[in-house]
Amino acid sequence: MRYLTAAGLLLLVGPFALLTARSASCSESLIELPTGGIAFSKLSDPASFALESENIVITPTNVAISYAVANKGPAPLEMVLEFHFPDLDFSDPDAQYAIPGSDPVNFLGVSLQIDGKPASFAFTQKALLDGKDVTAVLRQSKIALAPVGSFQNELSATPQALREKLAGQGLIVESGASVDGKPLFFPSWTVTTNATRKAVVPPMGVARIDLKYRTSLGASPDTALRKALREQKGLEAVVKAKRATYCVDDGFLGGLDKLAGADEANASGVSEMRIWLKMNPAAAPAAHFKLVVDKAKDRRIVSFCQNNLKKTSTTSFEMRSDNFTPAPELRVLLIERRANRPADPGAVGPPPR
Image: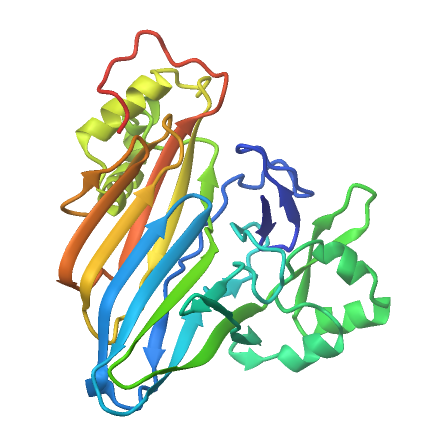
């Protein structure tokens, strides 16, 4: 899988090893992006709209959301399907975003189906610098607004006069140097991306809408929840916040202790992954709602805030409810030990869940 730093450098990610042109002091953590689902807007008759079902499946690889949208009225129900990509702020050259796609516009690899048939989105993308739209300037310079891939190579191919002009406008900022001593320039703008599609539900009919995209998987080569770290006073606030965000209980910590052991230097190779969904407010509650979170590997442990969960396999958890509106966001925490790294044989705790 490929990831992009905010500086526009391509990361080649193994389990959690990063290969970058940045200095060794740069953080190795990947920042997960808040992604969501479809917003149903511009309804021709809001009173006729009903959400018969909403099914969400989350894995470390993909997020899939299926909707059954009903039209309760006697006339066709027109609407606009909107998918809002997370904003990308490139002003911090050390921030590393988990961007799983290679397309500079559809950087999440979003796909859509309506009634089982592929449907295309119309994409709108803008670049902003201090609130000013600089899209035209970048397009004229033949620079991608979201520099997925090798931004340095793309920039170095432009005339020096253009680079100096972009730097003078504050669009790129010099920060560090390459291995051969040449100055490196990084973008400083923010990218906003939206996808839209018109849809029509026939009178008294139902349309199935399926959205799928690649997961923005945040990652860190260690976790503050390890016993050797969470007992340090300087990390109390971090540990407290993480436990609250992901509803981490004592059982999870016991499983982590068994996985990681008490080694202070993380010789067991425990790594942390994170998924963040920010759901759009629904036009109506879902008559039937289902959430599935699948950690994909038995050796991982997982924690997230959700009531009425049922374990449906060795890796997956499911929640069902009727007349339900999902919480505004869902944060999922995954922790695993890298392959071929033994745990501390003296560690105790319940088996990972």
